[in-house]
Length: 294
Image 1 (cartoon, rainbow, N blue to C red):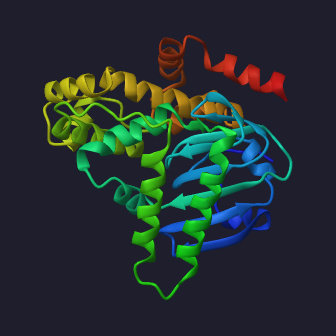
Image 2: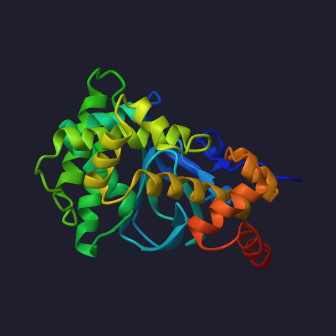
């Protein structure tokens, strides 16, 4: 059977692999993993912010095509619309997931100027390893969130859970506080740019489009993005397009021509030229690696 899309992994598709789910509607869910379903061993796209707390075992996972080795106790942090794939995992993991909607995630960062720093930190460092001495702190945190969510008659349980989550992340020993110099306006624009980029990179690659979407001039957007991230607008756009293209080439049966069309290129030669420039190899080389792995 041909596969022409990246997999979308939802709770519904994992219902046989989870237990002890407590939630506040779709805003926040806490679930215990009984096992990892086969579906996560192929590239899939996340729909929500997800924190996976592993208490035992070892795992190899790719996030946006970057591979990580996880050794419990540890935390895997995933933002929405990221491409993820597990390569190996300890059977029957002792793990708990906290899944948050976009609004709930935004509510964790009270200071608007800290939002970009938060998202950038998670994107650049999705894996956090803890010492064995920190395991009781992880367990107490999970138990506290579970107890708050369990009381469905409490109208403030979402806010209470958000406060617990914020307190845990702020107290993590690995947390490095981001510089606070002239951060507010610039990083808010950067945060908005990344949101627009995630929603439009498959069809829009010009700086003019993103500048217009943010009511900025192309020159101003270029300056803001460079100052906030050290990278250009085109660097960010290229990374998103290349990551999606590699995932489609490796995990679907789409032809190179179909991938080019899905990503808004007028022709396969134009896509190949872009891919070679941005990734340093041909799309067919990625497809060959898939064949070798299979």
